[in-house]
Length: 215
Image (tube, rainbow, N blue to C red; front, side, top):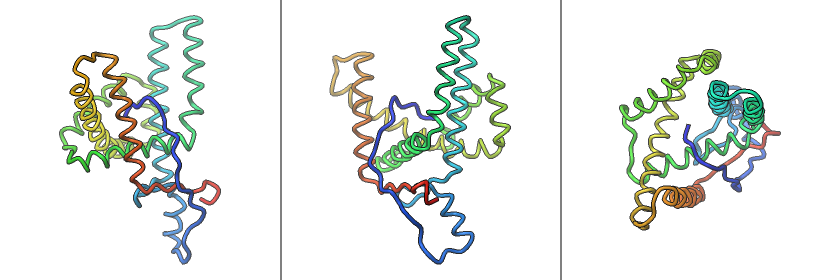
């Protein structure tokens, strides 16, 4: 998934109900929709998938810590990563992750960027190699369903490729505006600029969140 330093707290429109005269299938589709961006639905299945991705990240990091730490340091690391389980499963955090990535991918398209099949495949191959190193990761993927997992990952990585192009645009702009800046300073300025751009983009979108109590 795209790695962004912080989650944004955004003011979103809260939906309190659904339309009448829905067919049984339509009602089921609406009940599974937890949010929408410009009319494009975000479903419970999307939330479940993002929760799995977060669990994979935690599991991989935890396994990596076990390989290099021991004793008190390892115990503290385990406690830390386990404490994140609840955070990454939080519905609002999951929605924020999804909204951020979709928003920036829409911005990339507006800027004329595209994600080619080869670019997407290259990014997916990198993550496949990482997952393959950790049995805990491959087990979680098998439990979810490998075909289903990689199908959804392909859609995700199409957006991730687009997001990276926006990030590169921002980095190039910061470097041009600050030719004397180096390393960490450039990254800090680029992160700030990226967040400002993302907030601005999200302000142009129609973002709707379904009240959990009414789903």
